[in-house]
Image (cartoon, rainbow, N blue to C red; front, side, top):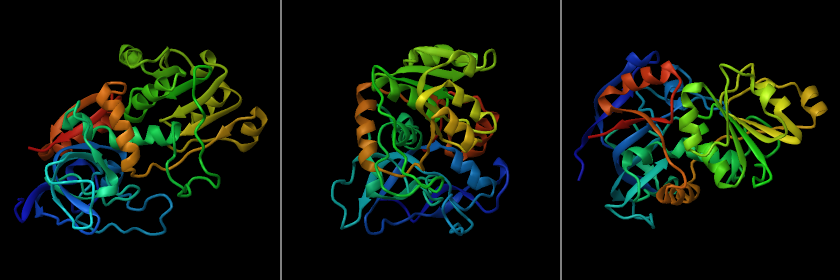
Length: 336
């Protein structure tokens, strides 16, 4: 059984990577509907550094519920240590992975132990280790909910209409911008799994990596403009966003759609003239979908690429690696 305290990483103030403090904190106890997980690995995601930098209100929230000190992190893989009386489906000793309490900043994953909602968890695929499992939940579910199935009826804070993924198949083309990153490399594989012709956009250093994941066509954005080379695309998944995002509208066929993972800049008049759709959603924890993704991970149909790993005590170095960009896959913290 766990002791009363554990090692964790907490924020006592917002700022750069230097504010991440490795220290002792109380070990949590599982509440109703929860299990206690002994953490083996933690995925590092953009919301972690957003929280560290001072963002404490999720899109759609009216006010912050974050109170310092706070433990960042949402993606975990580990072993069940204790189970609340009302939880069915998990037992002590089960290996699990999950995206915890998202969308919120209350995942508390950067720790030796975490109290996790059972509904956010799935059994870890036996064919992969904890490091690779920890790299899957947020990025994998984001790609899944944008491209395959939203899986919930919660309204998006970004738009009035419900997001509807484009049906992908052998007669469709999907373009993934930022294809080498966490969400991007999952999107390439999921689109290929659905049978689509996949165009991957990234810097040239990632070409062999992305072709190995199944990309049919590669565009090095440092040498060519994607809108000059890609045409008649059915769906664009843009994991980059920003002011250049609208250029991908010209790659779409009439009736096509662009799905921005991060906010982009689009002119409503231009999209209407082109006859295309801009649509997005907000990824949410979903143990059932994660179990489906887990089956693909277990068979090797989908793989998790690991950019780098760092011990939990070196979370600062992990965040510094993230800040340098050009990430290939996922950054993961390991917990001894």
